[in-house]
Length: 72
Image (cartoon, rainbow, N blue to C red):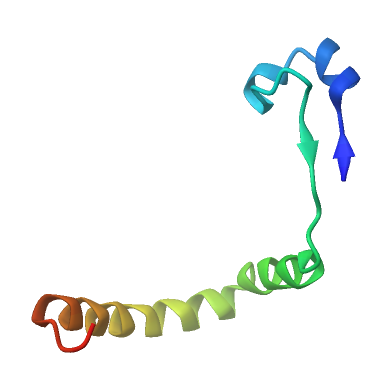
C-alpha cells in the first residue's frame, strides 16, 4: 500500500488524480504480476489479431443466447 497524502497536498495535478481529502492511496493486489503479464501479452499484434478473429463469433453467440433466452 502506498499513501500519497502529503505529496497530494502540494501536487498541481491532484484534482485529476483523486478526490480524497487525505490524498491518494494505492494498493497492489496479490495478482498484480499476472495482470501486468496479461497486459504485456495483449500489446502484441499477433495476440490482437487472434482476439479480433475470435471475439465477433463469441459475442454473436452470447447475443443470440440472451435474445432467445436459451438458458442464458
